[in-house]
Length: 328
Image (cartoon, rainbow, N blue to C red; front, side, top):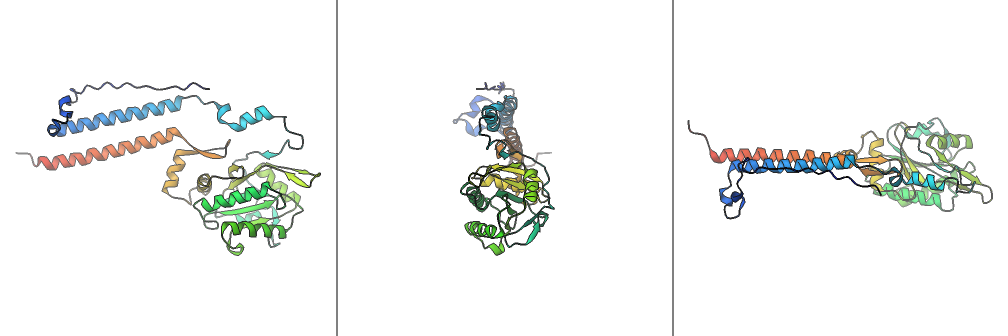
């Protein structure tokens, strides 16, 4: 365990110097509380809250971070390297954040039509799912998990983003792609004719160009005719650049929502999303968004200053009205 550091700030307040007498805070004498003491109390509260927030921010900024403990992928690679059978070694997802996918790569869509990847880019972020349609279990779990995340993301498929599933098996056909499209669009709740979620098949050379660009490594097992591969989805920008990775078969809708906002260069989303993105940061090691405590404290400090400033302003206006015009 890493010892935690605590920042302590002592604030000595001389109440008589501020013109605040203790008896004026008693319930018995509360009617004697003057405007001067009102400003003094607000100033005191301002100082105490500001000092507390500054102390918390300093402690969080100076606290050491245990990279080995906080990064599960680092711990896994250190403990498990070389422990996997040879057939599984080299299989996984290596992040290529910012990499450009080959938009000129050619495939066939679910209708058998020749297409290029550029046909699906240019206006909206795209969620890329690499799978194969005859996969006995893992790919169907990824596709089902992605469908559920799409439904709960707060965005509409086809309006704010598109999805693209590409088979990495060169033997699969558009007929298999069409069957898969029908299944998952039915789960999503729309018709295949109206949805912007396409399912592609292609030749090995074109598949390899795409999988290499996004760092997706897999192997074919000739003993059972199946592929050994990792599970996850990739969020791409409208220009076809790798933006975010999410691992596993279940995906947090909030994380997907924020990733789509960032990948669109803030062309979609709301003011609330902008605030969340200011307070949260994408962690490539976990594929999730985590709160950045210093940014949260900065936002709290700004909000506190705003509220106290407005309080002082309205209080001064109220006191001015009660006192009336000064005699000449």
